[in-house]
Length: 237
Ligand code: NYM
Ligand code: MG
Image (cartoon, rainbow, N blue to C red; front, side, top):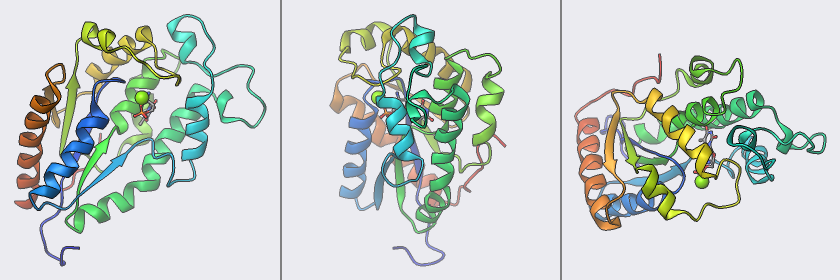
């Protein structure tokens, strides 16, 4: 761990639709940073293991979604057993995803202050994009963003830009809720509404090595800015 007064680590975030290569690139980036002597850790949200909310979120995501139109496919299973996370309302699951981040926020800031660079796979932008894409009455963008306002903000957000055709060609969606092409396109549109000054576009349709090189350039730049004293900002404040 770095001594008090040592430069802080950077909060490097990956965002994108499912299958855009976030997890692959995040893992590679951590290794690349460590190889050049930058202490780095891989974090991901939802954090399914190290939190009290993680198990409920995992149950919700792995419960079979009701088969129907895109909107319905994203909604809660109406026939879920009482007490099961599978049947949570869109509002309740949204707040659990947010709480899952708040559970880790103090540890996140602590790690940054100890000089550890955090490479994070999804965060509050995913939260706002996935829930607002459901188009649930009353759950517009402002409602979706409110519970995450004040969280530590990323120093750079790497948007894994992948055209719909390229995403479709990758196919191979898993069995989780939200993993269907129609809903993913609604999510993509919602992401466009939440982008901010921290965002940098990465062409995720390129080969893995090319993407990794571009990602590393942006990450090294963020690490340098943080070393030079860029403060930790609050999200959406
Ligand atoms: N997801 C993720 C949300 O709906 N809200 C959130 O706040 C976050 C962080 O969880 N399809 C969704 C997006 C994903 C799903 O994430 C699981 P992953 O990275 O695909 O395992
Ligand atoms: Mg996924």
